[in-house]
Image 1 (cartoon, rainbow, N blue to C red):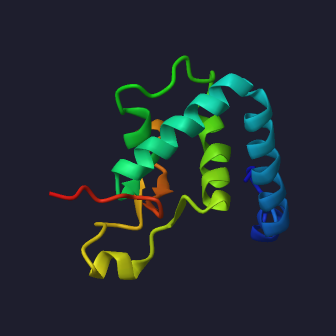
Image 2: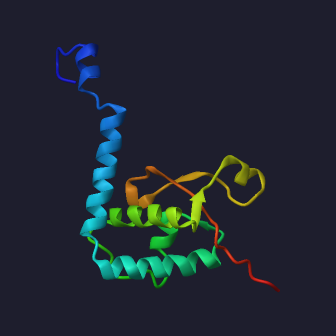
Length: 133
């Protein structure tokens, strides 16, 4: 807000929900298009294996896992479209409050050190294969 601007001026300058959704979707598309096809394939294969061995997924944990496909794209944002694609494939779903009550997870979101501590969702693996003793 500039000096002398009214509250009404500030409100008019704010983005609408529709504009925010459009900007988010445009950013996801750009990030996905900028990522190399071979990296996307490698990270999808890595994630499928990871999700079979881990009951949950959080983006920082994935980035920090040994063997995560390198070199990663210049920006970590390219991982977001991959996560959306895994949800569409039925590999993951967003964690829900009832998952906390069952003890499966501790929270439905966590601050991400890779995103200036903005909260990112915790995902539940739908392809997790619990190891048998």
